[in-house]
Length: 264
Image (cartoon, rainbow, N blue to C red; front, side, top):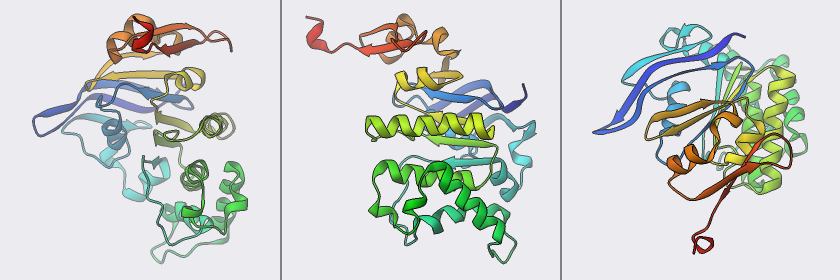
């Protein structure tokens, strides 16, 4: 398989605080790659670096074998789409208009949409099941609906890589699974490489092809869920009491946090 993202010796600091420390890893094309780790481990900073928003102080990044710095802005947007955490919802646009903005990397200098742009936007809405919301504003939608709209806009870019920073945060259980099923569908039906940050270890275990565990800006380990989601690694990384057993859904690890009252 080809490599979609290759990172070598990536480091970044904010003032005297090192946030990323000599990270080296690669993401295989077509994988659902999930980054996990405690708060403050550098997950969002890493995603911003891959998205080209943050320029790391040291290290190299390649997208499909090309240095990030060699991409022009529109060309990069055709390769990588990013859905950050905590997106604003006070846009004075309808859902359909917002999703159509994903076609911006393909517009001429005049920025005029073509028939193909509208067709692709409609396809993205159908794929994410937001067609019925097309005429509504974002602040009229639920959290799960808003997240699917922003993902639809990213799909509208027709990028080969989709980056998402905690797309299931603050969503109820049904919407979490719906978003993760959508990521699986993107991977299998469209061949998109999906890289996302998640705080939900159990969701990550069920859906990921590869997991990357970060702590204090360093890679603790990387591999298949069964390889890295074990008691000793997780308890030390998250600094809390927990249990790891087999999920009733199959040969998958299941992580349960143990509240203090059960330790007495």
